[in-house]
Image (tube, rainbow, N blue to C red; front, side):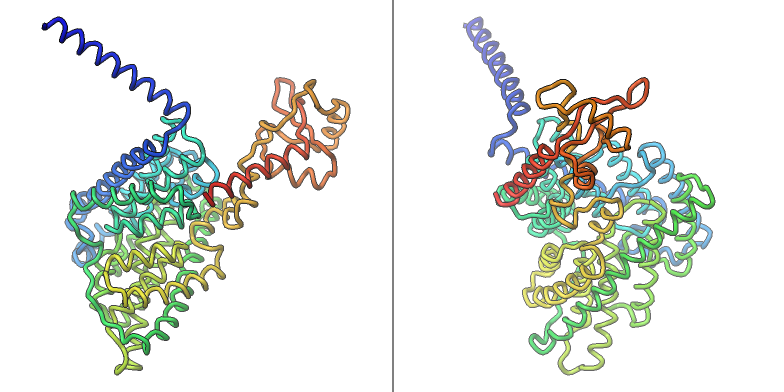
Length: 558
């Protein structure tokens, strides 16, 4: 009897192992089925939620260790510290950040949400894992040592690294990889704000930049799992403890329209300020021949000096944002803090110190709305609600304009308050701020960042897809069927008209149009210089481009 039982158990274990191995091979070879993908989305969402909560708790622990207080009361506490300590901490933090990024990234730059968006569009939903982890560590140090950025960007990148690893393990195609990336981003935002609805829509609106039905279910599953993880580990609490202001409904709506336009202008100034500071930093680094690892420390020194008089710029800015939402700041403080915070964010980003712009835009928006609210309620005291409502609307309006995420930002505010009238006021302000800011900058901060690197995502797939198709894969090799004449190829090479195997259709298509030939020679580096390997034909290039456009349209409308 025992022998028979042992034989049965051994056979069952062997069949189970064989079945698992066969299932894994099928998963890697053919990709996941729908139910399998939903389970994977659940796992990715849970891991991304754990990453977001872990990053948040690490900030709390390190801030208490370094400053003696976490972000909930950091500004007030830092005001009582010795000025030498206030200046020294960001410098030391900048040195550590510079060392991390110098060693573990090829360009010494921290990765951000813009890189995640670019990975979704151009790299089949993958991001750089080594550089991404280094950027997360750098952002953590930045936020704990006086850097004036936010934590949502880094936690989205943590999720993107996780989803990229999973995509590699299951050999995911482009659609699956992008959907997994969206799952990770949704869970990270959901866990950060305890806002699962907004997290799901943020992934669709900002990361994937489409609302395809096939992506909706797994992204919702991941977003909900991220929120559940946050609620289990942190508690069912919102990012900010908000009052419940009342709205003098129809009469007061025109004021929120004006606030929306003002917020759009403030958002544009914030974006311009960051880019101007980056350009100035590049110029100073080039002229002084400053080593790239020292650049964050220089920014840290400037931030430390600024924080002597304005400790409100240190870290995420939770305390100052909360004070703005509850109306615990005066008019002059709100106006001055808007300017100082924008300068501090520009210094931090220009110094390549890491972190995101979501939380800073929330703080700038809350301060802008509060200042506007004081003026509006003073002019029309009998028909105006509380100034906190203006701060709330301004917070959503500036953040939506900076991020290019009007839908998800409106929902984040709605989930924070649960008040539909408040949501309506925010929606009015958000719509106008987003419209104005998108006219002044290239759609959003993230898309403008990508555009500055020469990638034209904002113009749509017809502009960026050629950069995803390599010349090498379309080359007809020498001597093969339908290949080009060697004589004609060498004539073009002598005229300097040729492509390299590593080039893309972004280079090839304009050159084919300009030259007017039906093909272009393709060369590669050899021992004796460039070596002709074949030619790319205009017809093949156009067919590949058309297939890519059709595939994108199919994905976005499926």
